[in-house]
Each structure stands twice: as C-alpha cells, then as structure tokens.
Image 1 (tube, rainbow, N blue to C red):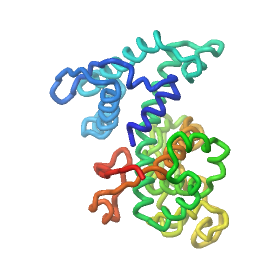
Image 2 (cartoon, rainbow, N blue to C red; image 1 turned 90 degrees about the horizontal axis):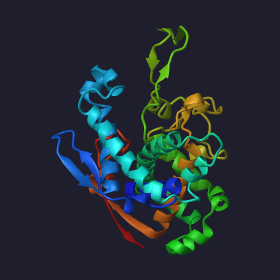
Image 3 (spheres, helix red, strand yellow; image 1 turned 90 degrees about the vertical axis):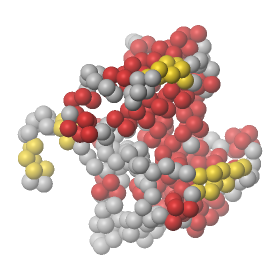
Image 4 (tube, one colour; image 1 turned 180 degrees about the vertical axis):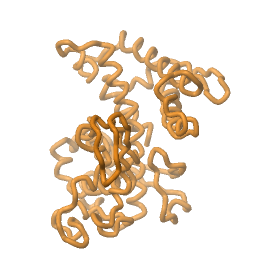
Length: 330
C-alpha cells in the first residue's frame, strides 16, 4: 500500500516517479550509528518511520522540547537524514524538471521562492504518504472484515471489475468518482473507525480562557484527541461497528441515536478542523478513492487469520500492529 501511494504522490508533485530514478541516498541508523547507502524510496520510508516513532518515545513525553531542536540523538540524526533526502531530490530536480508537475507550476507563480516551494512540497510528501497508505490499507481490511459492505461496494464498482489498468484509466475521472456515493461513505467510515492520526495538531492558547471548567492560560499548548469524538455513543449508532450508511442522509444511522438530530460537525474530524484542518484533505480523499478503485477491481486480498478474528485490530500511524496480507491479481 505504502509503495503505491508513495509512487503516486511523488509523480503528482514532481512530474515523475522520482524514487525509481534518484540514486543512492545516505542514511544514518539512529540505533547503531551505521551509515547505509539506500534507494531513495527505502531511505524515505525509514526516515518517515523514524520521525513518527520518535514522537512517542519516553524522551519525547518527558522532554518535549527535544522535538524542537536537533540537539540530541535521535533528533539530530533525523535532521541529517532529512537533509540527505532533500539534497538528493534537489540535485535530481535541477536536471529533470517536468513542466507539468505541481512543483514546476508553483515555481512559476509570482514571488515564489524555490526553497520555500520545495520544503512545502516535501512536507506534503511526508504528511500525505504515510497517512493515505494507512487509510487505504485499513479500508481494504475493514471491507474484508465486513463482506456485506464489500459486496455492496463491488456492485457500485462493477463497471471497473476485471478490467486492465489501462481500461480503468479510460473510465475513471473526477466526474466518475463523484458518482460513486457508496465508495465515499466507505472511505469516510474507515476514517472514522481508524483515522491515521489520533490527534490534531497542537493549539496554542492566545488568551486566558476556560473549557468545560478547565482554566487555560495564554501560551498553554493543547492537543485535540480525535478518537473520542469518532466513538461518541451520543453521536453515533453502534460506534464500534463498521457502517458506511451512517453517512447516507436517507439512512436511519445518519442522525444521532437518541434525539434523531443532525450530528455535531465535529463528531467526524480525521483531518482536524477549522484553521488547523489538513490542507491536503481534498487531495487525500481523491487519492484514496482512486487507489481503492484500482485495488478492489483488480486484486484479491487475504489477511492473516489473527487479524480477521480480532475485534480490536486498527492500523493508525501509532498502532503497533502490522497489516499482514497476501494479494493476487483477479
């Protein structure tokens, strides 16, 4: 899942699948300080995992300031590895700039600074690759866990089933995706049940205030926990169940269980909300849907028995579970 997502995003941003064309990149292992020469995609994956893993170490919990400065291992090594990726990518783009890429289009805008554009897009690559691949993997897993949902979605995707990559490409476009209502519901339900990120970005309090009786001082930093809202029994019918119909206005699951009123807009926020909402939300939803159409139309999956039998298997970024599966073309 991750490789497919990575190739699609790099192609969109830079106009080509750069992972297959950039040479070896230097990577430092923060555990044993060994220096490796890795393929670009392998180096990127390791750096991405390092960054996410370091967020939840004991050092981070007790000394969060270490995340802001590259003053000790593994933070300074992460910084060096990121610089290696930047350097290799910049050198490649200097010789191989695609006119139709997002990168080149942004550079053509008045006042655009190359360094700023590059860092923004590289940040988007880090933020959009891992989260989307987790969402895609989780969605396929939940479909196989809920065969009645899978069967209903396959009926909606019947015109794509069994077709070649090229044939699907001729049919699938933005307008066609907008017609796939049940696919949209399935993706939204998957993001509710297993959002890739369990927390929104931190918020800094700009004025003294109180929330639910808790006093907050100017300068305090708070996090918004997404999961409690996604599983709130006051907002959702049977919140532990995978029910895409809860996003269908015609369904009995669309409203709150007791009052029958519309759900609070903040009951679903896998991309956070308001000023801190993910700027890549629309692209992520589009990307997830496109890849799912291809995968479900052309590939059969088989998941490990212990995952299929579990009632508590989730695969968000901080999950310790591995999504074990095998796959074959239909």
